[in-house]
Image 1 (spheres, one colour):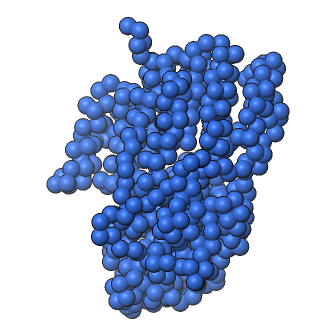
Image 2 (spheres, rainbow, N blue to C red; image 1 turned 180 degrees about the horizontal axis):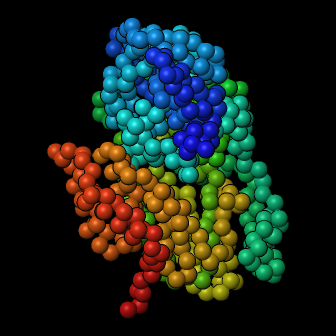
Image 3 (cartoon, rainbow, N blue to C red; image 1 turned 45 degrees about the vertical axis):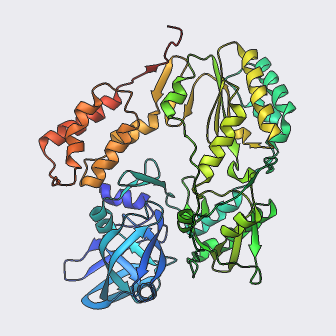
Length: 532
């Protein structure tokens, strides 16, 4: 089978078939491979317009509905006639438009993509405002990494949804619940432990069962304020971003759940204030979807109080040669912190059917990571056997199994004092090896995480500077693992310089191949011996 057609079939869209004549027929199957949101500024109204876009490797051209083109204020001009077949039915168009600049919200909204030509469809394109094909992906250097379910562009990565129907994906959002864990069954699932060890683990977990009930607690005696910068004025986004019809019902159920557990509150017309941010849908890697609130404008107006984030490799190497390690996964981490009433009003966001606001600390706020990391660090600062990076907690021990359970017991006890919730099913209990922050921890030392290495080795030859930067970024994450890495990568870094024209030569190919071969070698970074 033609590899291109086979790839397109996996993505949920059929490849384009070109006629021998003057007309071009493109088709796609209404089973999206990747969905993103782009932002375009309407020059006439000076308003931002958000569009739901399908990135489709199964089609070559780029299409936009006439309604979306008008909403963006685009100039529609005559063009040679072309026919298209879509799941919404066949159509013919002899019009096109040009989008001068646009942003992909999920990837990097500060960087502008320039001069996008699109064909104007006289009818709906399923549940999308636009369909952008291979020409678009190639022109802007956007990679769809299906082996990882990742969209990659210029060193930035965002999860994508594998080919499924909208209805299926929408249904997944309501599965995002936090049920109480069956601790006895959970202990029995730890097949790397003996039966006696499983029973001992169960006894420890049972003493802290409040952590595993799937209920959102509140960090005591803390209320977050969002302090404005001098001269800052409220921001209101105006109109809401369109939500695909297939997601509306289940999104509303998710909102109801968040309201029920005290994360969100509805805002009525009499209490609505001057603050308002847009929200939109983003597909997740596990084929679920979630809504994101765009707090960029609010972040420009509030003061951030930076807290030092630990260097990942330093944090890991501080562990030393352990005997057992437990990697605790917190549930709903940010949501444990309550916002003040004034801060809550500032987080108001809009959806097509109403206004809501956060009652708890939200993702996307510039202050959230600093605040959360600072509190988690102070919680465990006197426990040298606990390492914390945001909501990923490592408990490691140098003694026997009983010693490790005592350490785990102490860590869980601390979390209980702050009413935290733990995802028991996603926690690795008393293991000898574990993947953590892109690395694999073993009793002998640290390895690069195998799936990350496979992703590097699977990368194709870069076609532009953006793809070179993406490759370098992935390799540099493990910059301390391989000697002479910088020597080999120099020809590629030189290629990314501002005044250097992109021309891929044998020297660059050799460097590219050498680095891929280098990262393929199993390299173990031993834990340092601090006693020497």
